[in-house]
Amino acid sequence: MHHNTDFKLLKSQIITWANDLGFQDIKVSDTQLKDAATAHQHWIAKGYHGDMYYLAENLDLRASPEKLKPGTLRVLSVRLNYLPEDAKFSQVLSDPNKAIISRYALGRDYHKLMRKRLDKLAKRISQAINTHDYRVFVDSAPVLERVIAQKSGLGWIGKNTLLINKNAGSWFFLGEIFTNLPLPLDAPVEDACGACRACLDICPTQAFTGPYELNATRCISYLTIEHHGSIPMELRHAIGNRIYGCDDCQLVCPWNRFSSLTEEKDFQPRHSLDWINLLDLFGWTEEEFLNNFSGNSIRRIGYERWQRNLAVALGNAPTSDVIIEALKKQVGQVSALVDEHLHWAIDQQTTTNRQTRNMQHPYKLIRTVQKMHPRDA
Image (cartoon, rainbow, N blue to C red; front, side, top):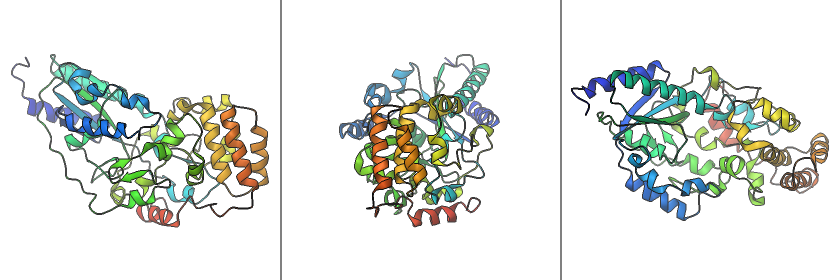
């Protein structure tokens, strides 16, 4: 089929082209995913995926990349770092009036940027070998991307269920090219979590059922991004001022001391989102929300969930007449779902029983972050 092609040489060329396009790493795996697909099914059976019904669909495609793209023999996995120089982690963690937004969402949406570059890389391979048949994926289909990346040796799946790389921590995006080229395989790397359980212990909502297993229905990233309904009452205090996602299990991971910084301008914070008051964001109209988040992944949760999340964070903020007034003003403006969270927040702001207040930022987490990210402390 691919006559007289030196695939070892081609692979080394692909690595060079990937680096030229700004990817930090690229590795090759096969398509044997039966065991991982079975583990995924067990996870689904426990209901840990919550409202993310799409994760329970197309299980056969997840197990067999060659069904998703016929002819697939190998998967090329790439890594793209997204942590900027000044991440302001410890400052924003220690101020309950500031909004905490997951680091990956502060800049432009990565999907388009990565897809364009992966397309360029795939086309470059096609120029070198005209029998190349491929399909590009960036978080866009039933692909077990972390498992594939682990098989390829891009890192290991840590106790926090994220992919961790010894030289880069976990602050990176993943993307894939399914290809029909029989490129030489890379070997997996060893799990290096050891006895560490920092991520399991720090989780504000105790979303981990144990090492390597996450109950998404308790995870703050799930609750603030994927979940459409009411945020469970018993988890609202623990959410603190995290209004879109949560990075706590990455912040305490010792391997993130070695995290590589990004040079991508697109991943720099926009609209001062890394250092902005909850009240300022709460004051945005729906039109401002849509305009300000043009080209940003936060836009996809919509204004209703945005206001719901902010209401919870303002309920958790230190008592303030200005906050109470702002909350009351918004009642009846968006939806019954938002109103329910606004009433809860007003109640939190006006009640005298406040022992649970301000427990959302354990001192241990702030100190850990200051130690690990000295450039940011």
